Length: 286
Image (cartoon, rainbow, N blue to C red):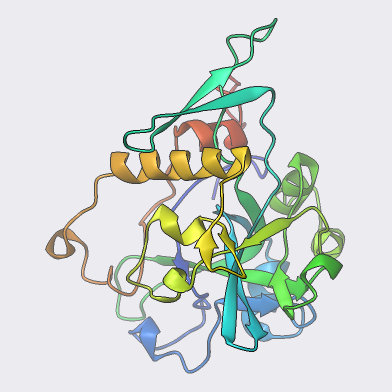
């Protein structure tokens, strides 16, 4: 609460906004869904208008998102994400286990490294709810949605994507950029790409890079991955293997439904550190 408005904080929040005024002791008793917030109602619905006017704006990070297109044989899933830049980098595949490594083309910037997959930066609203009977505060958020861009006309709505550092800065800096100015950033973006993926993704039990692999719609077979998708799949595979997972009985009581943190936490992860700010910069004023 005493931080400068330009300071960025990375923390876990539960997806599905629980407004601070909710009076029940169990957030799961909410009678309405708040995972997504339509842009045309965010300043009229009380659950969203309150925190929005108080400057509770956040950016939600994701590799991409899925949408399904209705077709003759059912629904076809697509993975939607930012275009990726290789920056003159090449990929080397290990034919034995499919591992991927990055090689930098020779030149003046030969020591440059790929910083990782560029995540989608989606506009969100958050709030902090405290149980009436006492207990830890629960941070939750909703993702703002807009009408789909022309290239994605087969879907009705999509996340409001903040494209570029300037848009992100304006959305987050609630003190310098008032609500009425910030909401002008909420609009469809054309800077987006997508490809069809297997219906393997339809089951929530499936959580592997296979969910993102492009397929050929006619044959329903995986097609040869592009350099960009190879880069993504290799990075996600390595990240998944390197991240230890806690057992269910080691997690807090609410973890099966809620992800929560008692206080904001800074991250030093390479991809997020680059997004949050360069190392070595002076600490934000208090």
